[in-house]
Image (cartoon, rainbow, N blue to C red; front, side):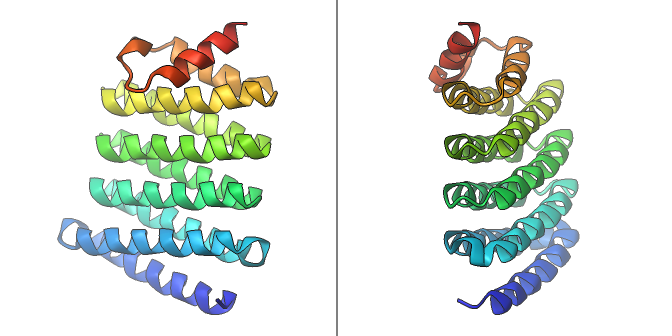
Length: 227
């Protein structure tokens, strides 16, 4: 695999995907496939480590741009796939020790998730929260404190909008993801502000933790936080 050639492929995919995203529903299947392909390439380059770090960032940035356009045009399926692809790249990057790419993936997910939630794209908002949770927990396991802080802040930001818009299912996923990230943050003794972000959001919700599918992670987190 050659870095320069891979970068050129990513660039071409980005240009094509950005164009089809701007065209809207008529080309949604094509745009979704582009974001899936970018996720696949980004995962492969992340697995190569430091040598391909810049190319992996390029893939994440391309997804960020296409995802924002898709979310603005209310393309729920494409935005969901974008969030899934960013999650795959970010999680792989964290596992391979690429903190810069991990942060880039989280920040990209924040931008996409905010627009998705504002446009009431339930599936895309939920997938964004799922992806941030996966990246955040992987980052916490590696001790990437800034990435973990960004993940917690992103979940809080997207979660507040989701709750305000009445996206109940997506909000529940935010809580579950925050619980997972917050629990590892406490267990790994990261900066306490990560746990505070999670506790602030979970504590302010009207939704009961018992209503959340797979609610063990937020329950465990709140128990640890109160100790």
